[in-house]
Length: 315
Ligand code: ADP
Ligand code: MG
Image 1 (cartoon, rainbow, N blue to C red):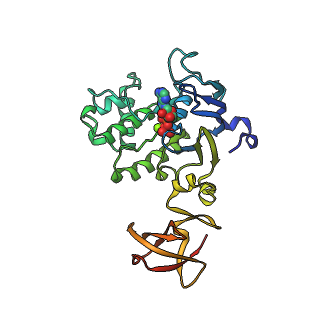
Image 2: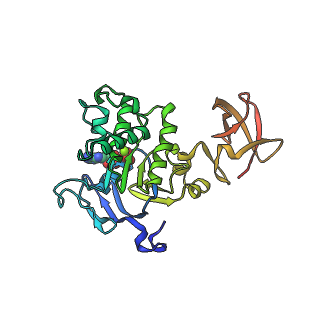
Image 3: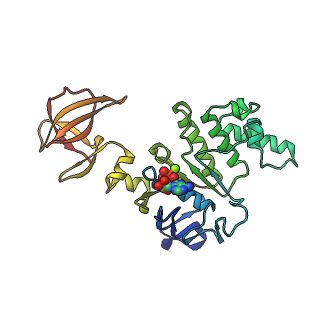
């Protein structure tokens, strides 16, 4: 949401004219956006588009070439101006998590909690282990865990002192599908309940849909969209954005059409030749040729290769 429509006190994170380069060519150029308290924002974009870099900059890990970042009234400063990298009110869970391998899951989660009230500390650790579903592993040494379990320890540790802002870089990338959906729901629900502002870099639409208030799309060093998931989904405008949400085709003169928006009909202007059917669970994704171009649509059964069907768009 643009800051122009918001009273100043709602805005917590404010990124102004941010430009950053590791070497000579900027990775991020003149970025502007703001995030309200308790909002959940996803950053999406192709690999190498600067998602992780943006999170690191918000954490204060590098110095900006131009621009400013504010958390409320505090300016986030990089290592040139800040002796210790990072801020107490921000937690950042990197793609490569940094845990203490030779101590237990509990000790890792409780590392930054005060020992002054041992009972409260124990209670807090077990609450956090419950959020990330690691209760049974409390006493296990971290080095013995799988990648996905380590990622969950890193998440619990970041939550331990309830930060005001949490930055998550591909937070479920190491976690298997059996656990992922459940964990995602629990974690994002927890953050909303506690009004913890959350910025998630991801390439997985499952991390976004149903959770994000806004999506920031990075492409070619710039923000090409900052909109609600509903708006972007309904009107993706660019193939990069449509591709994030699912299979689609660009059909002249109709534009971007998702595979589920096409249905087989008795007769129409769109006649295609089937080239393949892929089983997708509750439907088949059908690959077909239209005027020499490959396109996709969903159908409830397999279709015979080389057969011809007519399609209609339902949007
Ligand atoms: P993403 O997370 O979207 O995949 P990154 O932020 O990791 O993208 O990287 C953005 C660009 O910056 C890439 O071209 C990458 O090669 C480059 N890059 C990332 N980290 C460094 C670094 N420490 N030094 C130099 N270049 C880097
Ligand atoms: Mg990354």
